[in-house]
Image (cartoon, rainbow, N blue to C red; front, side, top):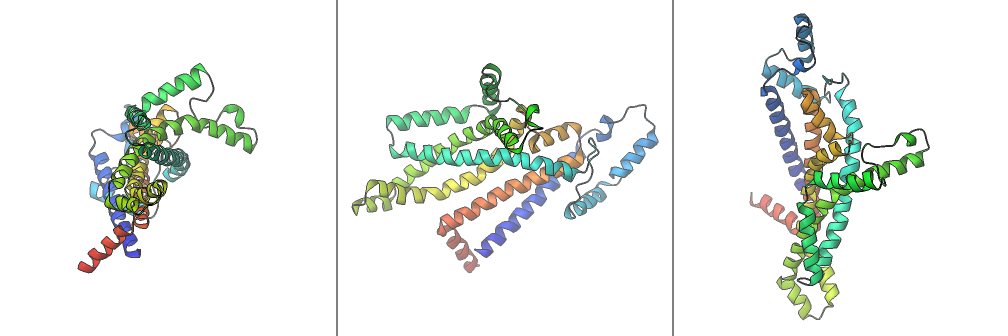
Length: 329
C-alpha cells in the first residue's frame, strides 16, 4: 500500500508540474501587454520600464520561467499586478471560501446520490425507478447558471426568503458569532444546492447502474441460491461490490465541482477561487492566475488521489493487481 501511495503521489506531482508549466507559457504567448491595462498611453516610458523590470517581464522567457519555478518551489507567488498585494494572502482568503462550497456540495452529492441511486435500484424497472431515473436525467441536464438564476428569482426576489449574493449580510457583521454563523449558512444554501444537486443526480444514475450490474453477477445468484434474505443480498453483496466504481466517480466529481464553482461564485458573488481566477484572467494579472491555477490543480489531483486510495481500500483487488504488476517487473 505504501508503494501504491508513493507511485500515485509521484504521478500527481508530475501532473501538477506539467499543468502549471503549460499555463505559464500559454499566458506568456497570449497577445498584448498586461501592463497596458493599468497605465495611460501618456505615461512616462521610464515608469513603464521600471515597472516591467520589477515584475521581471523584461527578461528572456527561459529566464522568467526558471525564476518563476524557483519562486514557486520556495512558496513565493509574487505580488498581484492589479491589487498590489501578496498573491499568497489573496489565495489564503479565497481558498477556504471555495472549500466551503465544494465540500458541502460534495457531501450533498454523496448522500443524495447514493441514497437515491439505491432507492431506484431496489425496485428496478418499477414506476418508482422510472420516475426517479427521469428526474435524475432532468436535473443532470439543467445548466448550472440557469438553475442558479431560477432559484434566485423565486427564493430571493419573489419570496425574499434567502439572500441572493455575498457571504454575509450587513446587519450580521457587528453581532455575535452565533448570528454570523447562521447568516453564513443562509448565504450558503442556494450556491451549495445549485452546485451539489446536479452532481447528485449524475451520481445517482451511476449508482443505480452499478448496483444493477452487480445484481446480475454470478455471486448474487449464488447468494440467493443459498437462501439468503433478499435485503441481505442487496445490501451486503450488491451494494458492497457496486461501491468501488462509484468511489472513483466521487473522486472525479471533485474537479467538476471546482469547475462548477467558478460559475456559481460569479452568479452568487461569492468571493472564492473561482471569482478570483476569472477576475485575474480579465485583468491579465499573471501572478494571480498562475498561483490560482497551481492551487486548483493541486486540489483536483488531491481529490483524484484520495479517490484512488479509497478504491484500493474498498476493493483489495486493485491493490493486489498493482502488487502483481510490481512482481512481474
